[in-house]
Length: 229
Image (cartoon, rainbow, N blue to C red; front, side, top):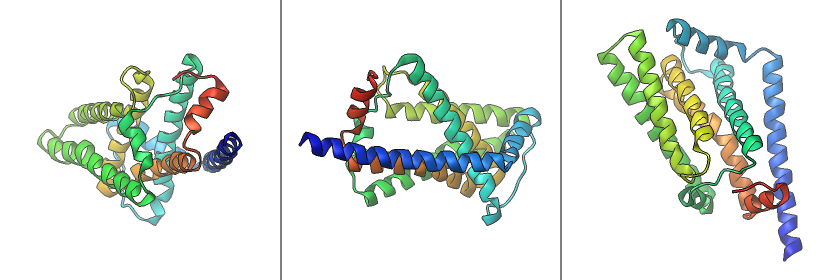
């Protein structure tokens, strides 16, 4: 039984490292070829001058979509790693979040799609498309982006235990919210929905697949690395 558990954990580890290697490799290629410059420039222009580069969500925009998604991913990962190195503590997810991984792939996928769609309605479409239309100034737009990003981050706090290092998790989600708000302004609702899904899917596939291979993987990592929950 113990050997079987170790074998499953080893296979899950291979799966995890393969996913991480693929993401790192793609990100390095993306950066070396200069494809990060456009999304970074657009974000800088928005916060510096209020300028928004409107464009259609078409196949030609895949580099922009991937760029925004990778920015969210690696800034979030960086914040998480700093917290991990400083505090030597793994994030402890809430029971409700943990139960999601007991669902079938079909049910899990439907839950993910539904959640992303509702979040984009609540935190991007409604406040930006409706509220901003009533107070259409650059300053008000930025205030709305900050407020909705704060609400977006606060909503995701429910995924972790209340007492377990909320500030890094909150900052990562707040950063994601600000980028998704700009994407909504530049690529409209379909663009924000697409970037949100492109960001979520690799992480979800990584965690869902690893947990299905080895349900005890989080506790095994804790034992091997010596991190506290």
